[in-house]
Each structure stands twice: as structure tokens, then as C-alpha cells.
Image (tube, rainbow, N blue to C red):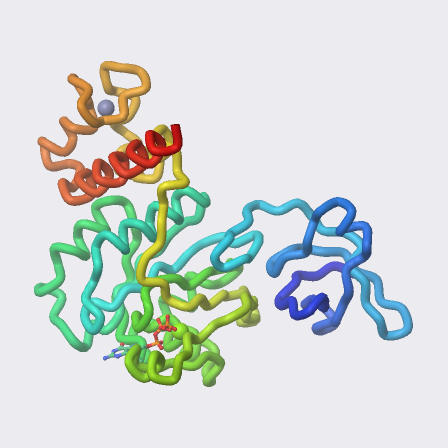
Length: 289
Ligand SMILES: Nc1nc2c(ncn2[C@@H]2O[C@H](COP(=O)(O)OP(=O)(O)OP(=O)(O)O)[C@@H](O)[C@H]2O)c(=O)[nH]1
Ligand SMILES: [Mg+2]
Ligand SMILES: [Zn+2]
């Protein structure tokens, strides 16, 4: 039988198959191959006397680390327009991380009930002009959820973004029930709780969704200085037009990317974030030598 691992707990894996969810153990041979089954894996299983075993793990299209999920096809990057305010550096980091993992990113700006579009148009249009599709949501009242549902169809989607953005609210609204705990950040901290602990694929019938706990910071300096530029989709048309091969669009003369910024085709804030990150990467490299 074929299936997808939707959950793994203490050596047991739960596989969604055409005949329902089957509890399985992994064969010992995976341990020898140093291959650990991951949530999201496409697997072959056999069931004997009611006991399931994973026989084969199909090769992965990708492997995310946080959350630990394989074969993710897209990310919904969820940010509240207010409460909490958009942290642009953090948004840029989430987007870079998506590009680095070859994930299509759709940016969801939530809590449109708390602000007017005009108040936040600069941020929204900056992200849109950088090549990202935008969905505007009022998740709590269900506004925009239909569009999300369309996006999720036939995909394995990871919901990411800072704490309090409304990821779990979106998921509950899609599922039509309280799957995930939601709440104000302060309440959650008081209870010492973040929502999701282990990765789990939530089966929405025609696709899977993964909720993640919000992080408020993370490092992206594992990206090489040469790769970083490719994590900015709006640079792509300019990169080959720079005078110098290997141009990092930094201090080099006759740089097409910098010209794109000057002409207003590339957003200046995005370029500045690129430079800031590039400098961090270079500084870290030098430390290691
Ligand atoms: N005003 C308003 N509040 C919302 C909206 N969507 C969610 N909220 C509230 O925002 C708070 C945080 O929502 P969650 O869904 O728990 O946020 P989360 O992104 O899952 O947060 P973590 O699990 O901590 O990462 C909750 O109190 C929600 O009720 C919205 O569209 N408008
Ligand atoms: Mg949550
Ligand atoms: Zn250049």
C-alpha cells in the first residue's frame, strides 16, 4: 500500500492511505541507511496481522528543518498588519528562507479589521512588487478563507510567521473546528505554551497543512554569500546584466541590480536588507577563518 506519513510519535508513524490511517513501525534497515522517516514522506507499507511496517521511503523533493517536514510544496507566510505590527526584517527572513528551500511563498496579511489598507499599503505593495502573491485576511471573521482554501488544494502547505499572526486561527477556520489552540501572545506566555510541538500534517481532504509555532527571530547566515542574491526573486532579471561575473551587487561598479534600485524597479528597503544580510554573512565567514 502507498501512503503519506502524517504524524510520527515515539517510533510509530501514522500513514494516510486510501483505506484510512495506518499505524506503522519503520523497518530496521532504515536505521542502517541512516534514513529516518519524516512527516510528509511518501512511503510504501505492508500490513500483516493488523501491524503495519514501512518498507520503502520515496525520495524527497525537499526536507524542511523547522518544521521537520518533507515534500512541502508551498508556504503561507502569515503576518498580522497590526497586533503585532509587521516586523519587516522578520518578514524578509521568512521570504528568504522560502526561496532558499525552493518553496513558493504566498504572503497572507491578516487582521485587516484592525487597520485600513491605506495605512499599510507601503508594506503590502513592497512585498507584492517583489514578486509575491498577497492575500488579505480577517481570519477571525472568516474573510479571505475561501481564497486560502483554493491555494491549499493539492498542496502540502506550511503555515509560518510570527507568534500571534493568526496561523492557527486560519487553520481552524479551514478545518471548521478547533484543531489548534489560538490565543493572545500574553495569554500563551502566561500559560507557558506555544501551540505546536511536533510536526503533523493536517489532512484537509484535498491537501495537507502544517501549522508551526511562531518564531520571532531566526538566523539565515547559513546561506552562502553567492546564494543569497537568488533568494530575492526581483533581482533575477538583473543579475546577469552586471558588468562583473560573480557580482554580489555590493561595492562593484556597473551593477545592474543597483541600477534597478536607483531606477525604482527594485525596492530600496529590500535591497538594503539584502546588503545587511550579505554583510552579516561575510562577517561570520571571516570569524571562522
Ligand atoms: N482582530 C483580529 N484578531 C485575530 C484575527 N485572526 C486571529 N486573531 C487573534 O490573534 C490572536 C493570535 O492568533 P493565533 O491564531 O493563535 O496566532 P498564531 O499565529 O497561531 O500564533 P502562535 O501559535 O503563537 O505562533 C488570537 O487571539 C486570535 O483570535 C483577525 O483577523 N483579526
Ligand atoms: Mg498557533
Ligand atoms: Zn551586480
